[in-house]
Picture (cartoon, rainbow, N blue to C red):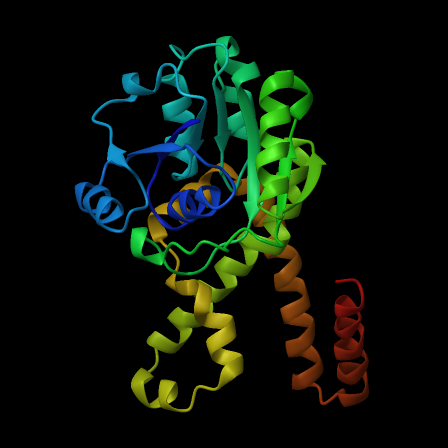
Length: 276
């Protein structure tokens, strides 16, 4: 199998390491706008070689798009030359715009996907071979993908040990705003609220597990997350508004010394962990 991985960071690099463990006789070719990432991926054995242009992937079996969501849209428009048998799987964290703007002539080639995994680290050195195992992958509007392409995508991610869910792209983006995109806005806000204080280093010296857990994802790539917020703007704003109302209610209860009601509010939040 000939596999192209466009984007040699955490997601693309981890996919390469993982897929080598489930298939023999692979050729994995990388492509990245960052020359340092390309060199590092070669040195780490993540890819066998690096391509200089997209045209080299014309007859490949599989192309993985592990790049920011705006770049996915642009790259799909530059892949209309691929063969009918090629499968393209994108790893975008938003799906509606990608689905809507995929060129019609390659729509059957594309399996719009979102692996619900990752870390705050990025670059080829962040890649790990078990990033995908046990995690969820969402396939969106897969009924418009070709039979061969959807079958190959299901086979690969099943072998990687992922749980497969199917969803409409717009539904996906609405849900992702609450469980992924809005939490990033909170984490960035928390980090900046500390950095704005007179002596942030003194505050950090007191940081325990709670602060570290909540601020961890503020280390995530701004380049990637600005694109995500732009593509999913309305859903992210709706999720932020919902969160803001809860935060304001919590503030009101504390300000007015309504401790019994605060207790009940917290108890209601505890119920979340009964469903996952």
